[in-house]
Image: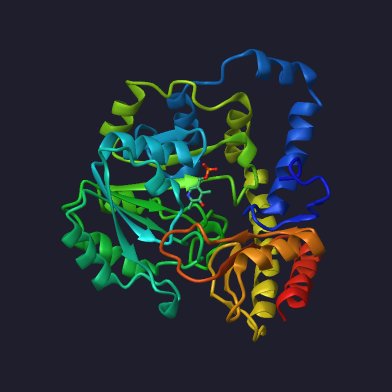
Length: 358
Ligand SMILES: *Cc1c(COP(=O)(O)O)cnc(C)c1O
C-alpha cells in the first residue's frame, strides 16, 4: 500500500492483531541469546532446524499434550491447511470467520455455513449450532473461540455440550488462537488453553497460532493437537523441516520458566490496556462496539457510513490503519475491526475514531 501511495504514512497498524508487549519481550530474549552470539546466529542460518517430531517432543510438557499428538506448523495456517486437505471433504464453518477455513477448501471439498448474528453478539447458540451441523452432513466443523473478527468466546459449558453432541463427526477443529486474551479460570502461572478437551473428545483438533498473542507472526510458529494417527499420517508424507531455526528458538523459550512468567506478566498488563480500550468504546454512541474476549474489537458503523470510507479517513488523516470488513462473508453491513495496542497508541486510535465518526 505504501508503495502504491507513497504519501500514506502508517503511524499505527491497528489492522494486524498482534500483542506489541510480547513482541518486545521476545525481542529482548532474541537480542540477549541470539544477536549477542553471532556464532549461534550464523549456525541458525546455516543448519537445518530440528525435525517436526523433535520439536514436538521438547514442547510436549509445556503444551500439556503428548508429543505424538502434536503437529508443529509453519504458522497455524499450515496446520489448518494440512487438516482440511487431508482429513475433510465437507467443512461446516461459522460466518463471519477467519477466511483460510473456507479459502483452503479445494474444489472437492464442500463448505457450508452457520450464520452468527450481530443481534446476539455473534454468540454460538449451542442447540441451533448442533442442529445446523447435523443438517449439513459435514464431516468437519470449525469453532473459533474467541472468534475472529468478532471476538466472541464460547463459554466452556457450551463448548463441552456442543462437542458431546457431535461425537459422530470425523473432525471438529477448535481454534484457540486468541484464548490468552479471554477471561477463563485457569491454574495460576499456566497459559490459558483448551488442550485438555482433546483427551475428552477424540475427534477434536485444537489449533493454536502464536502470531497474535506472542506477537511473532514473522517467525511462522503454530501447532495443532490431533489424534496421533493423523500426526503420523501427515509426517509420513512431508512437513519434516517445516519450521525454521528462528521458530525453533522461539519454541525453546517455552522450556524456560523465566520466559513464561514474564510473558504472563506482559499479558496481564496488555489485558488492562484491552479493558481500558473497551471501556472507552462502550461509551461511544456513534458506533456499536461488540463485546470482545480477544485483542481487537469489531465496530458497526453509524447509519449511512461506509466502513471503507471510515478506514480511508482514519488512514489519511491520522495514519491509523484499520480493517474494513466488507470482504468478510457472513458479515452484512458496515463493520470496522480495530486492533488494540499500547496505551499511547490506543489513545490516538480512540481520538481518531471519535474525530472521524463522532
Ligand atoms: C491469525 C489466525 C490464525 C493463523 O495464524 P498463523 O500466523 O498462521 O499462526 C489462525 N486462526 C485464527 C483464528 C487467526 O486469527
